[in-house]
Image 1 (cartoon, one colour):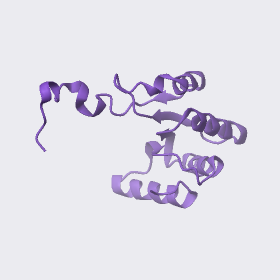
Image 2 (spheres, one colour; image 1 turned 180 degrees about the horizontal axis):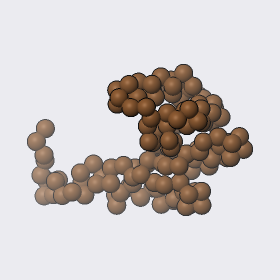
Image 3 (tube, helix red, strand yellow; image 1 turned 135 degrees about the horizontal axis):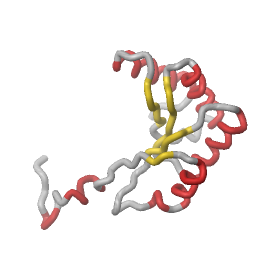
Image 4 (cartoon, one colour; image 1 turned 90 degrees about the horizontal axis):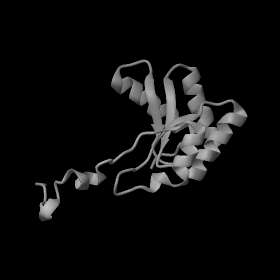
Length: 135
């Protein structure tokens, strides 16, 4: 697991820019919360990238209601870029987003980008009647 400290964030962005052959990234999302690095340090690094024009929008993934609320508060108090998106697991089989996290997102205008909307393929029907896909 890579820490979300300034060094690693900048290294990831520079690597992505080089691999993509572009000058900026439309949406950069942190993958998982890093409880060993302060929200202020993470958001300050992301804000520097936004101000430098290397990233347009920042988001997070796999974050909790508390973590999203805390990060939005840090952004607001310090005039830093804020998380505009959150990418968490959400499907008919996994409705955990509908608890407090959905309320935070509605109130704070943070957009959900659901991952695994077909519940790992279960909702596609490929496992019906005990079927097992090859591999």
